[in-house]
Length: 488
Image (cartoon, rainbow, N blue to C red; front, side):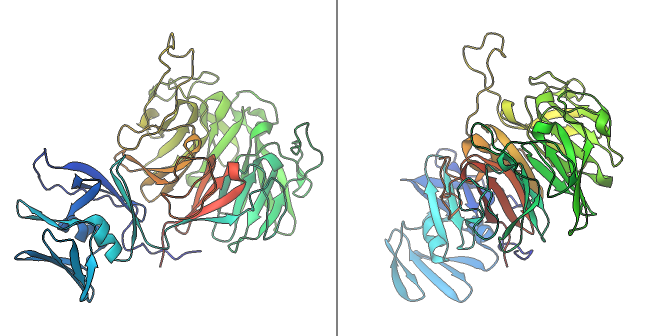
């Protein structure tokens, strides 16, 4: 696992450079630096981005200094020196003539430097996308990699593990757990990537060749699950599982040598009913998060509601109208969701909910029982008669008017909410302001490791952060991927 230090700049910090420029000469551009979104005022000319030198000093750290000297621009970093003549295609880097991507500019006494040249001079890779005015800058450590799984359907353990549409990832620095959905298994992965079976059993296969699910408590090795999607580990080491097609919340407890499984809430029958333990009813619970005092919050997907389970197993509906889908903010008992499949605990008693079939990220304020929309744009088909004859449409857009496509897994990194934007095949990030940007993924369903803006996922669903590393259940690729958010 990686150490808890930032890349020199922190993902959770957003810079706003507020210098006033002539409106007809500048466009807003985004810079994503090792995953941290920066918003700067910049010149965009011939698909090149020029950034004010003082902004670059903020972007690249306090060791960056710049001075103007007659018809030259000089900037230094550490013991290195770069001398750039105005309107010249060459610069001198530590005494060596070097071709530049574009010469610097001075406008209204403000120094602008070509971002691509500065980034490459500092030893960082850069990719400029003129379609969305975004420059991605990264160090060599900032990349997507495969943590476990060889990509084929299967249930093999060990170093060359196989998964079957894994959905949820959760756990601790000691062991990462996976809700291996279509194997009906709970798997564990050690820090060095070795996979083992924690609980569940494969007895028979269905007509499609997938392991058949079941409901059985007892010894962990003999227990049966039915398409489990998510889980959580409490402070005592108990593992709670959203056993989706069993419409139940299961619990793995006991010693490592002799783990056992019990049904904590629900009894295998679909429905909606509040109550304690087996008296409660769920309908395809898909995601969970743990709050204070061991309280569980559940995205009860096909009931279209958010449930709460206290430490004694009492189940209560806290938001949504049971069995009614739609979109409505306001008082929690009147709010409407549409198949929520992701949930995360935010600061100050807020719950973030991936309102999947509405393609929105919603907020449940547990302090005043109010539901609001945090990010995303509701888009209905043009031929919808009353607004709900057809389901809302997904889409893709960054910014304050963002669009998602079947968002599912959620997790917090500092005050940034990370989203598995499943049908967009991307990992998105939402700032506290509500602005959205793409953290990783090209949008094409593929399997590619590397720099985040070049990496490809296939229906990513589960997200979990351990010691600054983001783990992704890359469901369509049958793998667990990771992205290092923090480094030495």
